[in-house]
Length: 197
Image 1: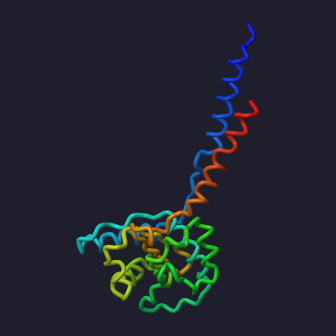
Image 2 (image 1 turned 90 degrees about the vertical axis):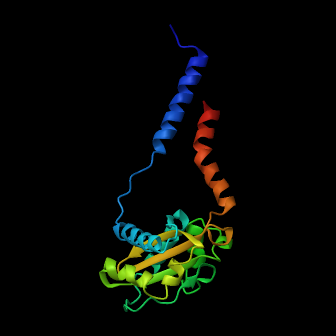
């Protein structure tokens, strides 16, 4: 008995959906982010001792921290007590800052109240890295309850912490137009498959 037209259509649609779902399965990425996780845990323990809420991971801030760490990894590392904090809205010392915001899909209007904290510690020795954030001028930012999220990135001897707020002015949120375009790109294969079936 030959399959009916509606059965063929349903089977074709099911095949397209399954193929699309298979292609979109997350690919496991093995990252060397032990330093970042260890530092975030240390920062949260420190904040807990001050009765402050823990910092949560902020995806866009994490992307920016990774990109910034990659940009400065070749700068000479002269271990010092933490350098100056860089306001998120005016990170002009990073040559590619606007491009990095775009690459991480961050609306520049959501960075003004955030803060960027780069440190250099040889071999990223965990105790010294944590000390640079909790026992120097950076501690005033880590102690600040306005900051609720963090992104961390490291390259070579450099660690970058990007602190984000829960307010629009420091959330490092995505650009709404880019989100819509991303959703269109996500659903486009499904729509094309649906119309050609």
